[in-house]
Length: 169
Image (tube, rainbow, N blue to C red):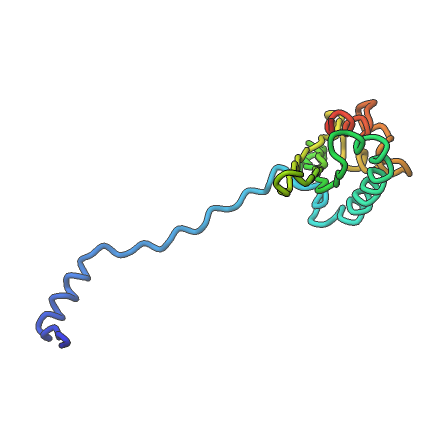
């Protein structure tokens, strides 16, 4: 059964609603502050260094694949894979804050008793040794040659190969 309010109560209800405080308009959203740091790919504008960074990443991956069998890949794990390569850049100055290259490895064996697969899959984030005031241009230029793993990084005498040797132990 549907209940109806008598018409007499509608004016009383309207008067009661009129005495309630008026709803305030929602405050406008606070302005979003520009990020202090951006990915190197997006410095100074979105996607500005995409082609250069993609080329660098491919050359570093090829160089790693060339040296891996005789160096890093002779250790505890036999299957190393380079993953993401990222650098953060201070937006206002164009200085490189940090660069890191992620790696994963795996080792999978068959347990002879149970037949179970035994596995270990570690990961690393290997950081680039960089001088304190390294600019995006200086970093890209330092790795622009034919052997990017073996070229000195700006502000240091170390190479990316040196950093990987320490990191992937």
